[in-house]
Picture (cartoon, rainbow, N blue to C red):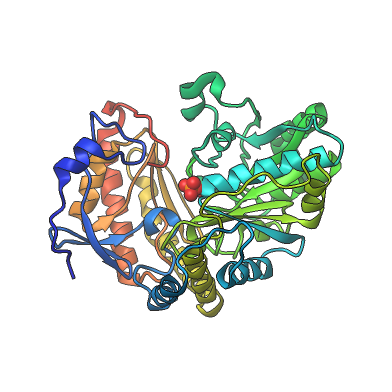
Length: 447
Ligand SMILES: *Cc1c(COP(=O)(O)O)cnc(C)c1O
């Protein structure tokens, strides 16, 4: 099933921005004409096994009949309507489902249009909350290095300060507070001493600045676009306690980790903690259309109502878009009815078995797996354009960034397709290793 119209690559190259690219030195693009299951079909008819789930979103695969049907029905009844003064069934249903699947403390839902906006909303909530509690000076956000929370200005202000974007925009980016990222890897057995050492800077920052800190924001368990790092659940547990001790809100950004990716429905479940404010996005609609959400507790919502404005100051044009909410309802139903836990644990075992050998490839620094995430970290930054072509030649779609060659496949991927991905990762890691030190490192975020 290919589209009739040819892809106008020349127009694309001349006129259309792609993520994190130059308009004068455009990187090559690949024309996709259709997608089904775990495969993308290019305009030349070649089929690629997708190892990215379209930036971690398409967990049930492409063209899933129940999501398509839900969207089609919604499209024909109410594709969009403003959310100011109006409500609709799909927004109510998706919010009910989100509250039912997340921790009990979370009771209120803000439907946002993308992950970055969900993070903006979370930060605004935190600031307005403290206004309502009579502490308007609590305006700073504390976070860890090597994080990623989005590309809008407030979201950028809590992304890793050294990874590029802060220096690019100088004083236009709000100065926030940073401490070193957690060092203890995810897994068993952390001694109290090791944990104390890991979290001591966080404690010191909270002790010193809690009068000016509104919230801590962190990606639970997995730092995604900031480096694909998996850290200890004990760190997260200790962080929750510190936030309580120093009267600071905890914002968990589950935009990458939510909906099963790390082996738990939400990554915070590894640490058995609750957020005051929770951001979800990416896989929320199964990757069919943009939608994100910011959930908060009664305490946060009531605090905002006590703030001088008395209302929460955000309301995008496409808030609660019915088509997106209908897709999300169908995707969340699939999560409820499918055996995602079994699928993710199968993927995890296979990744562990098949990527283990990559550790001995020259130039490889580390190999790690958590849930349906497999990572080969190289010692030096890779040449994305070159490796991208190598992956396509091998019949897979994997998009390396920085020094990372990683996959986050759809949960429905079969054993053979997954083997094709891991095989390609190892071959391409060899190429990257041989290129090694010769390659110029380039600035790229998760592009
Ligand atoms: C992708 C991502 C975002 C930003 O979401 P967008 O929809 O791209 O704006 C924020 N936080 C995390 C952890 C992400 O992975």
